[in-house]
Length: 386
Ligand SMILES: Cc1ncc(COP(=O)(O)O)c(C=O)c1O
Image (cartoon, rainbow, N blue to C red; front, side, top):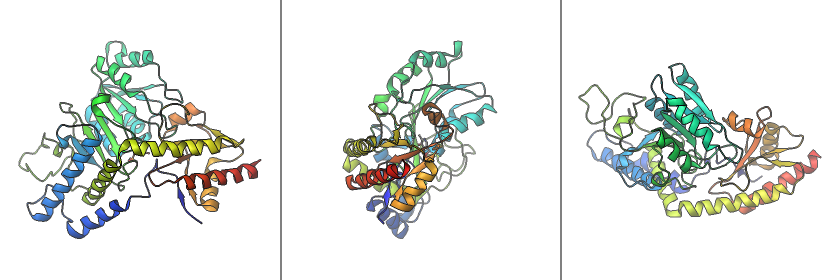
C-alpha cells in the first residue's frame, strides 16, 4: 500500500532531502553550539545560525537586524514567550474564536496573574465585526495591551483579514502578535505590509524544517521580558539577561541540529518561492475539493471562496471522524487528523465541538495522483457508508 501523507498542518513529516542532509551534515562536521567558544566548530555553527536568521527575516519581509528573529522550539514556545513577555498584571488581551490552545491556554493561565482576556468572534470564513473589535480594543477607556491574531485557522484554513485589524489595534496602541504557524513558508507573511509587532511561527510545518524548530520575530522597540533566563554565551558578567537580541530571548544551548535543518529548509523555500508554493497548494486543494464535493455524504466544513491555506475539513455522514481517520490510514494508507485539532473555538464556530471533524492538509510533496487516490478512497467510503 502506498502512503499518502495529508497532515502537513500538524507537521511536515515528509521533508525535502536537503533538510535531512543538512542535519546529518551538521552532526557529522560541526556539532558545536552557535555563540559559544571561539573555535572553528562554534564559529561554523554561528555562521549557520546567522544564515538561517537572515533567510527567515527575508521570508518575513524584514530588512532590519536579523537578530530580531529569535529561535524558539516551536510556535507554541514562541507564542508563550511573546504572550507572557508582553503582558503584566492588570493588562487586557484580546484573542479570537479561532485561537489554537497554544494561545488560549497561556491566556487562561495568565488570568490567574491578573491579566484579563476577551475573545473576538469570527465567522467560519474569517469575517469579523470591526465595530466589535474596536469595542474590545478600547475596553471603555482601558485599552488592550495585546491582540493575538491567528494568520490562518488550523481548522478552517481561513486566512484572517489581518491588516484592518492591525490598523485598528494601533489606534489604541495595542501590540499585535501574529500566530503564523499555519502560513509561514507557504503563504506570504510580510511584517511591513501587515504592520504587526510580533510574529510567532513553526519551523516544522509550512517551512518543512525539523520538529523542535520555530521562531519569534520582535519588531525593534517592542519590549518582551524573557521567559527563560540563563547563559547566552557572550556578555556573561551581568546577572541579568542581555538586552540585545537575539540573546535576550535565547537562553541555554540552542537546538543547533534543528537550526541546521531549518537553514536548509528556508533556503529551499526561498529558492522555490512562497508564491509558487501557494499556487501549487491551491491547485491541489481545488482538485481535492472538486472531487469531494461530488460525494453526497461528504460535508465540507472549511471555508470555500475565502482566502485560505491548503486545509480541507469535513464530515462524512454516519462516520465518526476518529474512526474514519483510522480507516483511511489502515485501509488506504492515507494519513489525516481527526478531533478538535487543539482549537475548540473554531469547532464551536463550525458546530462540531461535540463530534470533532476530519482534517486533510496538503503540502509540498503532495501530488495530483495522491489527491485522486484520496478522492477514490472517499468514493468507496461514501458507498460503504450509504
Ligand atoms: C494556528 C496554530 N498555532 C500554533 C500552533 C502550535 O504550533 P507548534 O506545533 O509549532 O507548537 C499550531 C499547531 O498546529 C497551529 O495550527
